Image 1 (cartoon, rainbow, N blue to C red):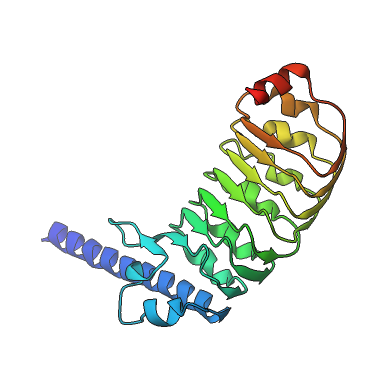
Image 2 (image 1 turned 180 degrees about the vertical axis):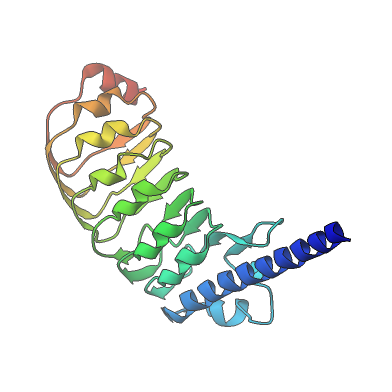
Length: 238
C-alpha cells in the first residue's frame, strides 16, 4: 500500500510539474508578445490564440515527450519591438532565431539562463550595446549569429574561453572595435568566423592560422594589419 501511495504521489507531482512548466513557457511567450509593437502580418493576433496549445503557435515548436518549447523561429516575421527577458525562462529552448526583423535595444541578460541553447540567430536587426559575454557560458552552444546589427565595443574575451563546441561565430556588419583577442585560438571546433565590416584594429592573431577546423574566414573591411601564411591562403582557395 505504501508503494502504491508513493507511485501515485509521484505521478501527481510529475503531472503538476509538467503543467506548471508549460504554463511558465506560455507566460514567457505572452510576455514576448507584449513587447512587439508592430506585427504587419498579424501573426500574433491570428496565430497565437490563447485557447490553443502554445505548441501549435506559429514559430513555436515543442518536444514531443515533455511538451516544452524547444524552438522559436520568428525569422522574417517583420516584428518590431524589444526582447522580453522572460524568454530566459524557456529552459528547454535549443534553437532561437529572430533574424531579419526590426528588434531594437539590448539582448537581455536573462537569456543566459538558456542552458540548452545550441543556436542563437539575431542577425539583421537593430540591436545595440555590447556583444553579450555570457554567450561564452552556455555549454552546448554551436552557432552564434549576431551580424547586421549595431553592436559596439570589443569582442569579449570571455566569449572565447570555454566555447569548445562553437562552430560558427558570425559578428559581421557591426561597429566592433579593438583587437581580435588572442583567445580566439581556444575555439577548437570553430569552422566559420565572420568579422567583416567592423572597426577592428591591430594584427591578426597568429593562432587563427593554427585552427585546423576552420573552413571559412572573413576579416575584410576592417583596419587589421599582418599577413596570411601562403599555405593558409592556398587552403582557403581550394
